[in-house]
Amino acid sequence: MRRIRGYTIPVLALLLFVALVAAVHVSTTTLEYSRHNIQWNGTSLFFDRLDAGGAVAITDYTRLDGYTGSLFLIIAPSGNLTDEDVSMIDRYLQAGNMVLIADDTGTGNEILTGLESGIEISPGNLSSLDREYRDPAALTGTVSHPHPLLADVTTVQFNHPSAVAGGVPLVNTSRLSWVDTNGNQRPDADESMKTFAICAFERRGSGELVVLADPEIFINSMSGLGTGLDNDRLLLNILEAYPVVLYDRTQSRTADTDGMVAMVQWLKTTPLRDLLAAAVIAVATLAVIRRAR
Image 1 (cartoon, rainbow, N blue to C red):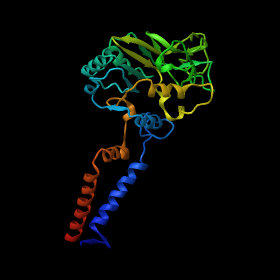
Image 2: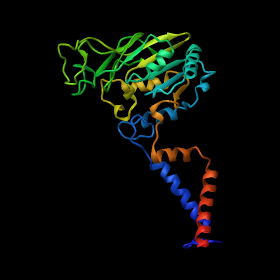
Image 3: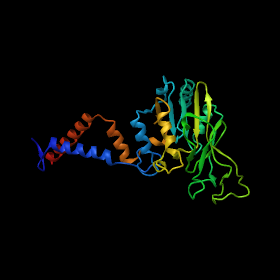
Image 4: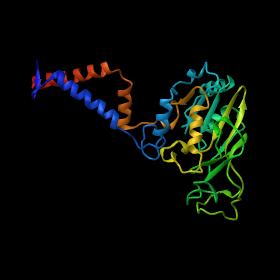
């Protein structure tokens, strides 16, 4: 049996394979909203719960066909949609399903416009005197209309949300709120204080479209907040209110990867026998090269 520094080729291949598997478990990223990011601004905790509940990843919008009475999550969309993609989403809605778009940048308006929705995301530095923390943009919202996603939810903590216009408001700020255009964290004479909607919905055929102007409710640091806040209840409703939950991996920033994580994702989707065979080939190739020298 050919040896390299005391090891047989199969043993070296096995060691290489073990190293690759170990990389799968220790690799992460710092990309905001990424499900592979275990830091404060990642969504790893929420997606662990999604996967544990059997949620279905949608990598091609044609896979939305055939569902009824399900929920489709589009968190932090990147805006890379075609007209056909929007048509598929509309068909899914009309079939009696719900789409939840969570976005604070206005990128989600591309989907809303394509759907000819009456809801629009209004990006801005929404702030309020009614808040749990020092930053006025870390404001609280109050449920203003009953909805299955808001069952047993009264107050929600947001983190730098935007406002939404149109539709039926579901969660509003207090009247002591404003858009802080100059970022000085206080209302000025030209910054009117009023109530803003952060979440709204509208009927679409047999289905429903819900727009939430704060994808950060899904990030790791927003989990396990203190008493008096119903964020965890809201997330639980999203996970359990519908028999089937789908989530977007086509254009959602939660699917973002970089560097080592991208390689790890390839490893995860490659059968074990193929990985081991590749390891054996790699080590054997090294042995041939070494022998040729």
